Length: 422
Image (cartoon, rainbow, N blue to C red; front, side, top):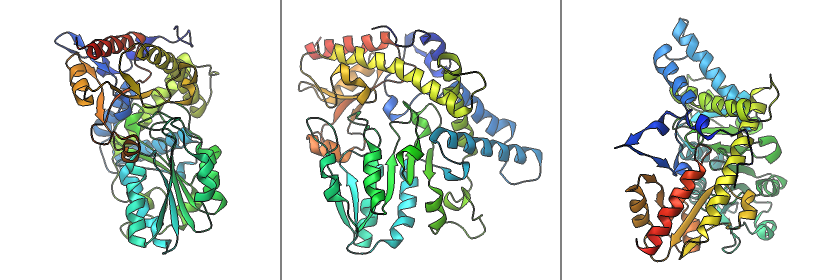
C-alpha cells in the first residue's frame, strides 16, 4: 500500500530523531517498542539542553537564568494546554501518569463514604485502576467494573447504565488500550459519569501519540498522558478541570503557592522534562507545517492537529500492511481488531501470540535481529486476566510515525521464519 499522504517523506521524518541513526555493528535498530516509550525527537533534546545548560536555575528568581526558566515553564504549560484543548492553568506536570493519579486519588477520596461506589474498567492500564482500588479499600467504597467483550475487544457499553448511579463518585476509563489497541468511546462513558455528578478520569496515554486530544469535547475532569509516549522525555501530564482543581484540598507544603499548577504539583519540578515536552509538541507542529494541510500562520494547536493527522495517515498504512501480512503467518493470533478495513478503530499497537512459542522467546529472537519489541502484559492486569494470558503475556509490536513500510516487512518476515522454526 502506498502512503495515504503523498507528501510524507519517511527519511526526512526519521532525520528528526537522532536515535534512528544509531547502528550496532553496522546493523540498524528497528524500534517497534513505541507503546512502551517512543524515541525522542531532536527538538525535545534541544529544549532539554536549553533547560539544563543555557539557563540552569530554579524558578522564581530575579536573575537572568531564573527568569529564563520561568519563561520556559510558562511556554511549556501553554503548549501542553494547546495540546489537550485546555487553559494553561488547567494542566500540570509530574513524574509520570501513575504518580499523578496516585496523588489525585488521595485528594479525591477524602469525600468518599461507605456505601459509595466507583466504576473502573477491565481494559485499563493499572495506573488508572490501582490508585482507585487502594483508595476505595481505604474508604470502604464499592468497586464496579465495566467489562469488555473478549471477541469484539470493545467495552460492554450496554452495561454502563446499570453500573453508574447516584452513589457513584468516580468513573475511570481509557481512551485507547495499551494492550488491545482499541480506541474507546470515552465521551459516552464520561457522559454517564457526569450525569450523576461523578468525577471522570480518562487515561489518554496511548491515544496522545496518534490523534488530537480535546478535553472539552470529551467532557472529563482529569485526563492523563505521558510525554515519553509522544516523542518527549519521561514525564506525566495531567489536565485538571478548573472547577475540580479549585475545590480539592491540595497535598503540598505550606509556603508553596495556592495557584495552579503549584498547589497540585508540589515541590520543585523537572524543568528539563517540561521543556522537553514543549520540544516534543513543537516536533508535532513541525510535522503539521511540513506534511499537514495547515495554513501559514496557524496557531500551535492547529499545527499539532495537522501534524498528527499526517502522522496517523502514515501509521494507517503501516498498520494495514502489518495486519495483511500477519494473516499469512501460521499460528498467529492477534488480541485486538484484526480487519485491515477497520484499522481506524484502533491505534497501531498489536498484541499477539504465535502458536505455543513463549512471547519472551519471540521477543528475544527478534532482539537478536535488532528488532526491538515487548513481551509481557504491560500493566494491563485486568485485560490479561480476562484473556487468560496473565502468566505468559503476549508479544507486543507498536508503530510510530518514524517507522517505515520496510521495517513492517522486516518484522513480518522475521515472524514468519520464527513461526516455521527457521
